[in-house]
Image 1 (cartoon, one colour):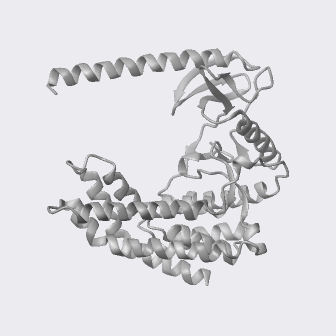
Image 2: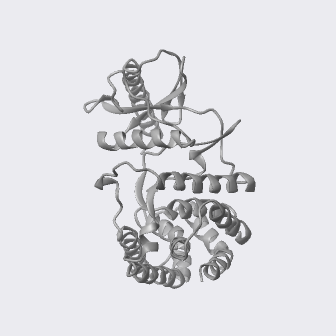
Image 3: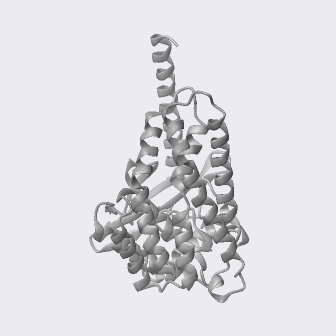
Length: 354
């Protein structure tokens, strides 16, 4: 494509994005009118509209879920507020609906908004406070007595099936790369590390299958509860007088340490799988909410799966393989460099589990 054609295309995209932004803003303005307060000022946030009102700051954002899910989120939020957990609770419209907007133009959620700072992933204090807050949240969610609809339940076999799918995809990439006569830098590095990561994936799958055989065990059932669903540094807000947890849209009913594993993986990848930090995170959670032997095993299995290797391999396979991204090579080199530290942490966790 010529330079002028590229410039014209980019201009069209820019105009289209601005037009879409205007449409969304107009829809949001119409939604605001459905709430029992006056909005004096608005500003754009991350994919949302922050509103100043006589009732404090609120945030209006698009919502892609069902009405039934929104109603459960509202009910759980009310319960958590009663329990003293600060969250971005859903606000009902003047018609007592959890959602504004329409099926045709899109639905919106209005929620409480908190001005603060996100969890600093470089701060050990922030990280450990966030883990303790997660344990507190899980304990509260365990006490929720409302009915949890079937659509919020995650199948007992869901994680195993997900990891089985990822493992098949890793093998598919291996078969593709192995069939190439001339391999690029990424492909050579991939083949160097493939066997090691495949072995890890298969060992985790075997561990999950063995643990699943104990479904009738009381400890297995005790692991389950409502989960945040996306507990990460962006959804943890530090306030002047405490902490707030936001963005519960992915909430579901599953093994609760899944939240802990998700957060730990995000943090430890940024800290070169620091064993001391990892064990301190587990200890901080355990001090608030005692971890059973089965929960520790589940945590180990979730962290032991080579998820980062799968992500990189899958991204390579689904992209234009005629031109390999230097970023993919960097990411692969990084996980190769971190692997020794990662295995040291997993070994420590394994002994902790046993």
